[in-house]
Length: 468
Image 1 (cartoon, rainbow, N blue to C red):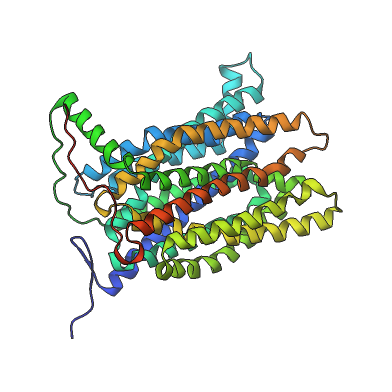
Image 2 (image 1 turned 120 degrees about the horizontal axis):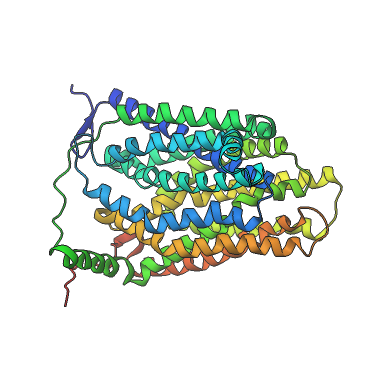
């Protein structure tokens, strides 16, 4: 009796080989998410401690990443599709960028010490705080740029090396591991940010640099057919490719519903950097908020796998709608802190309950988001269509990052209680997610017209573009 094997392109796995593959990919996912959550949690706190205005925090953490995603992400994604090396087509980008990302993160963690040296030797006409702020802004922008090489190719690696029949289950495990990394950090380390920020930041950066490289060296890609020859020569080839790309991705309203829904879902998170200040405004300490994030992550992990299973049976688009309706009900409840003054103990208890409920309902959308794209976009051009949304979302998200910071600064000038402007956090989130729900309803309607469960096929078959 022959052993059961699994295939992904030219790769063949036994059960033991599959366990090894999943182990390395999920370990890399854990390390990658730990790095990102440390950076995403500590950088806003560090900027705030330097009295950076809210518009600068929004610019550095929302606008700049959106600009990089709009301009660099599509180029890297399509270039990796066409790359052929003995290491594969995704691994070279991951291996090449990881040392530089690690170095940047170490410098961010050491910014106080580096800034003190720079101020003493080169910028004596500036205060230490000014030098630290400018150095940190430069390093954060550098990190956002370099990390794009990782984020642009990492998910595509899974599609290349994981057998198709196991991809959905792997993506569910991928999400759960990400939640485990986030929850572990929030519960055990976030509360120590005020006293041990440099040590935690530098430690997580070095951990990422060593073990993410180890993951890249142990995961092998298969062989790929030669990339399709691009038509024409020189500028003619560039124009023909751009025109084909635009016609295929943007000429059908069905894809626009996906793009617009994703945009408004994304800009609802333009407020995410200020969530910790919302928690502080109702009386939570950083340690309490970190532990709350950890608990909420564990609860959402228990919701995530059943939600993914429901998406497989019921179709991801229906689970997306279910999650959005739930969020439209749950998120506005957090506006209670704008209406009523409550004792601190009561405020903290209500906030914690509503926060866990919010994150748990959000898990339905998260579980179905990527599977929905995989089911609705053309399979042979998934990377292309995936980047098409980023190009449109970039300018909108950039503007959202600036607007949300400016809006909070405007509210700050009109409210007496410290941090009370951050209690408007749920208003922004609920408004954006309501608009997202409208576009998802329109998408569902057109999906049914295109065959729905029984006979859906992606619209707009490939038609070569011509230059006239």
